[in-house]
Length: 250
Image (cartoon, rainbow, N blue to C red; front, side, top):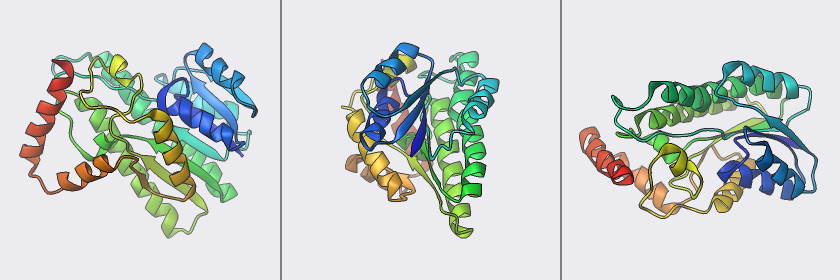
């Protein structure tokens, strides 16, 4: 088997690469930092192809697909993404548009193109890495939460289309809570709660993906939080989320 992983240079993407390699699955790893990708290649025994690419640029998304479409990829892991803390009227528009390109466009385009291929072969796995944020609105980290809502709902709809048409192609979405990665540094905020270990999240996610689980939530406390959020009125939830996010930047 062969897996393509975007955002593979750190965090969940890196640990997914290592775990898949431990399962003897060859890798195509994509990120901007070549040295980080080279480090992964040196530390695994499977075949590894490195693609140094900035997926915030739309033409690069198609370039990536065209480079690997004949590689018989069996698994697509859409993981690349970033966030940005701040009040909507004050955050940088150019950075937000880059986020939308990476967190939505790259996922959307790659999911569609690989899904078409997988359906023709009638096999394959897609896992989109989102967040518990996909179930909520996020005052003070608004665009990031909105992107994860998009990916969550898109993945769920595709799952049902595949199920109804009895395709042997599987799609999952990973929705963790806080994870110990470089997210905070890039987003310019700090989680006050302890994040989950990214290697644990990666292993849990891949194991569940292979069991054809749709929504993958690694931590019990996150599952409970998402469940009870359904019963709170929107305005109360928004106030709670505003206070929660504000603590990350104060």
